[in-house]
Amino acid sequence: MRSVLVILFCLVGSVAASAAEPCPGNPDALGTSRVLAINPAAFARIGSMQYTKTLPLEDHEVVITFDDGPIPPNTNAVLDALASECVKATYFLVGDMARAYPSLVRRIYNAGHTVGTHSQNHPLAFQRLSAAKAEYQVKTGIESVDAALGDPKAISPFFRIPGLNRTNAIESYLASKSLVTWSADVVADDWKRIGAREIVRRAMRRLEEKGRGILLLHDIRPATALAVPVLLKELKQHGYRVVHVVATGEHPESVPELLGTAEYNKESSPRVTKANGSREKPAKVALRHRVTNDATTKRRRPAVAGLHESGFSTNGFGHIGFGNNGFGNNADHWKQHQPKSFGTPRGAATSF
Ligand SMILES: [Zn+2]
Image (cartoon, rainbow, N blue to C red):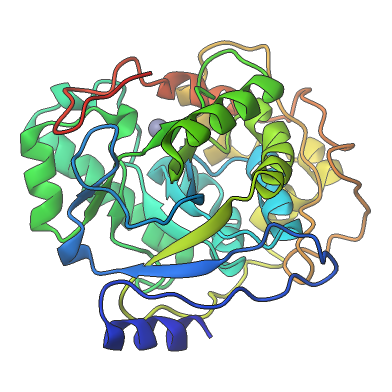
């Protein structure tokens, strides 16, 4: 279906729409109102926070994006929330996180979301990297997500600069590689120490101010994971429609899942997680990304039917407890990713 849709869009141009499909089991779902297929050559840089150009959205249309993941259980919780509302989003994954949690990367893709990248290690001062180091970050991040997906056609040529710390040099490099540089139109400050309620409030207020836009969120954050279900309800109540952005070109309908692997088991069962706390790679990632230690995680069952059948039930966020997950403090990964500034605005002024 996905391949067919995108090929069709290629024929009609860089922008196309599809009718919303019903959401099984949830007649009141927010849903995804249309698919917007963009030709990377026509959208080098998007997002009014930093650029003059953004996506061609209608009034009350929103594109939901998530940065810095994947990481269980927060990414899983967000995926559950999106699935229950039949909402499709765009993910900007960090390479080392993708290497650590490849089955979660595949879950994101197989749920129908768009997968872009966000560097290999998410350097905090991306704008100060040498050209060689910045290019290495871009290239290796893509390679890592490619490796996690197992199909080079699954990844989208979409890149978001860590911290939105742009430079002319990195933008030129990204354009030379036909990568769309994604900034955003609206942020909810969810990298700051604010709770779920405040994340929802800021997202809604700023969307109301702009009327539409690309919303930037961080699915690795516990508070964001808690905010997303509420946010989706609010969007529905306020008449917003979700637009799913894809790149023109052919993409596989799905990629093989990593069922039965140690990786799969550890991501899908908290009982297994505790028994295998010494798993080497995520532990290393956790340590690398540790900043503080107050918001650790416990895993929960992913709930998208057919993707992870681990055999124990869940109800909403009841299973999320931010205790020790055996791998250190992965949930604090986001804290290293706080955009201290958004670089030099280019084009339209940034204001928030
Ligand atoms: Zn980031």
